[in-house]
Length: 224
Image (cartoon, rainbow, N blue to C red; front, side, top):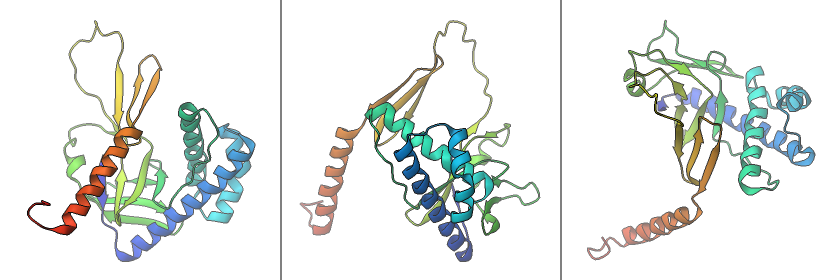
């Protein structure tokens, strides 16, 4: 669930500092992984945890999330590119763990509480998406605080039970995640995954966007 949040000017400044620190920590750990090829989460956290907390001022849970973020990036690259390519992280997001990094306080309806190195921040958020499932028990997975075009969102990973018809004749269930760099990524109940590259489609999309922008600047009837 992509849910917009509305920080004050002061809170927005603190969130910006938080995502910058998180990105810097990810790039620091990424350098280490690129040099050592260490992809054991336990060993990597053991090696980097203290420095990440001291040098980048991250909270305990966020310091662990940094290693998970970097390892996940490298595993995806190795799976698809079959070679060690170092990822670079921009100042746009922070990984969050429900109950430790963020929560929806029952005593403060309509507010989202996020833990930062600068204290706990309580901010209003758009309740539209969550209200749709107010009759269900939601469980939150690994989520993200993300800045998109100067607006702030929390990208919630949510699971809940649904009533379905009998599936006795179903042999395999496949989940599909659609995206940009990969048109689709699939994962099935047998543990198999597959990625469908979107390079060609992405290039066509970029070309159309460029042509559209060029025509819009002319503003003539024929260009429209």
